[in-house]
Image (tube, rainbow, N blue to C red):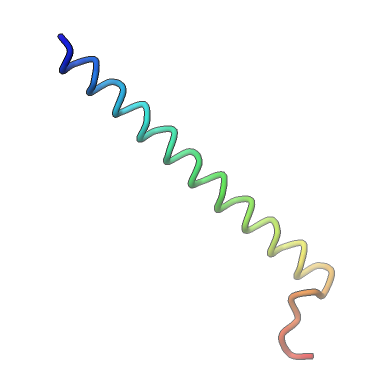
Length: 45
């Protein structure tokens, strides 16, 4: 019984970690998009 509970807990942790990673990546992408739109990320200048 305890094994099943720990499996479920681990699975939930993994799901949360994956969602967090996706959110971080999306936030990073949004920050890059803003930099590009404002010209702050213009490497040629």
